[in-house]
Amino acid sequence: MNSAEFLLWVRGPGLNIALAIFTIGMLIRLLEIFMLGRKQNLAELRSNGVSAGLRTIFTRSMPADKNSMRRSMFTFVAGYGFHIGLFVAIFLLTPHIQLLQSLLGFGWPALPTPVVDLFTVIALISLMALLWRRLTHPVVRYLSTPQDYLVWAATFLPLLTGYMSYHHLWFPYSWLLGVHILSVEFLLILFPFSKLTHAFTLFISRWYTGMMAGEKGVAS
Amino acid sequence: MTTATLERGVQILKEQIDAPTAAFFSSCVHCGMCADACLFYTETGDPAYTPINKLEPMRRLWEQEYTLVGRIKKLIGLSKPITDEELGEWSDMVYHACSLCGRCSMVCPVGNDISYMIRKIREGISAAGHAPEGLIGATTRAVKIGSPMGIRLHALQTQARNIKESSGLEIPFDQEGVDTWCCCRPWR
Image 1 (cartoon, chains in turn cyan, orange):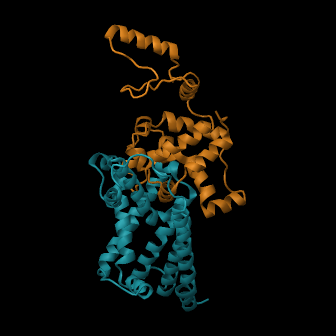
Image 2: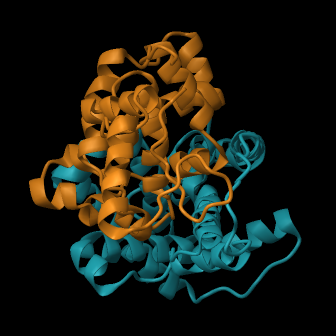
């Protein structure tokens, strides 16, 4: 297989297979959650919890109170750095927007490529810092399973290969681009069957937590 | 009372798992921020006291029973079933190493209500017979004697008579429509 054939495969059948597994897998995961339902709440409600639920979806993305910030400073800084960097790299790079436009039918403005490049570097450094923490901090090390390291690698590779493709580092561009797309496909396939699902389910979690707190009339 | 067994504990624990619980377990990224919020971790430095880890048996049960991948793993024998010893060990984690203060639920970045789930895992652990002895005793006394402290009816009546004599207030027993409700009734 030469680089052209490889690129054709990853951009065609490969991408379709990955997208199909991702979509069907995520649908199954969401059904698994919602089909469990909730027991009827017999207590008298302080409110229906809708506004508290919606508020919690937003407030948990914001920095927490000062004390919690101070206690978990490393996770806060690296966590924000990684997630903001990843978001910019995925959704604000011109070729990515063009691909999404061809899939979704609509596009949006991109950031200048050097800016995206900077955010990619921030994401890469944050991810390495988080891996270092996972390997050294007693709590995170204790909690970590092989899946945590697999998911780390699956997230790191698309960023790294994307960065390498843009800078034409060490390998021929067409191979780098092919490997970049393949690594994204691996990420998509892993997505529904790992903790990567949090990108979707965190909104459900925050909603339930906020809503149930609102029903009780307590803060969340 | 139903006898406490592992089967019953697992059954009760299964019934406790609802949509919020499934969303919470699906969302955890093992970041460890709940540990920083937990007084049992910050005071001991023992990573086992990380709040989300206190739910490990329940998380495994959810995975094995309510996810496709978990069911396949269970079918081909790749999953670790919950044992009686394990639930016994976890009793300490969820009764003695948790005050249900809810700080973990307040700081979790993905919004998991961890204390909500601790309340749920306690149901399964007590149904398996691993609740702390003091609680089992109090419950047994409440059912058999009528009071968790073991105060019998005649002792309560004597106390009521003493209060009536010293204060002059009427203390009604088993009467409808009164303002005072005595909740330490014997089980009959």
